[in-house]
Length: 274
Ligand code: PAF
Image (cartoon, rainbow, N blue to C red; front, side, top):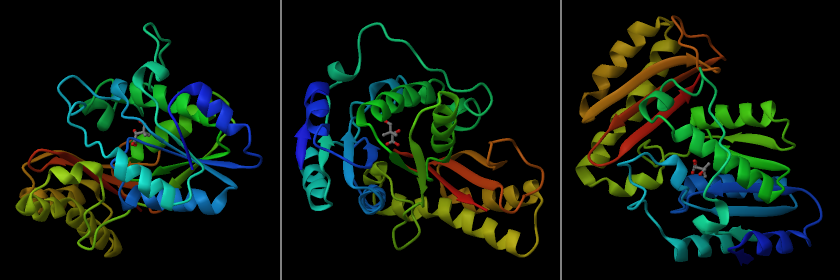
């Protein structure tokens, strides 16, 4: 594995790669969720590029940019063991100029739910993903379904800008108790970790209701909100179609149920695709 920190080094390292490139962009503090993306990318491509870059433009004022978990040494080992060919770890200066062209998230899909709660987040995320996809030369890029709206927006960007890369959605990875893996879970103490299970529990309850024939969105949300009482503050429970339009009734095969809630220090998100 080669570790590259500049654009020039990356271009140089890529020259010897002949064949398909799988790419997994990350912000580091790698966990089993990332590892499942990396493993899938390894299996499906001849070459594997991973990036670790805590992108400042997708953090809002007052968010955890400065305290975002950084574990470079462990991350490098994980990538090495997972068979990564090139690990790209750029500095901010490598990625950004002072006066940059911006990409805006689409007006509807980009400004509901996460887009409404974190205005500007998706613009910064799309900006860096565009840069990383272009730099990596990826044939396929792998993103987790946990960030469902992020995934939908990246797919739309690739379509709208005719980018020559296939976006591969990957399943959410959970711990044994059902908690969706996230780098921010390390902020949770034992009690909060227990209470954080309310998110996945509420989604499980929703599945059971749908399986029992309940399709009414308000009825499902009511039950979910009751389960979510263990969280400190619920930001939203939403039931939308795959284009992020609000639904009145669950449409089997075209629905995502999403939840965002604060438990202790971190703001957690989870979702379920039905
Ligand atoms: O999902 C993430 O970790 C980030 O949003 C991404 C896609 C690496 C862009 O910074």
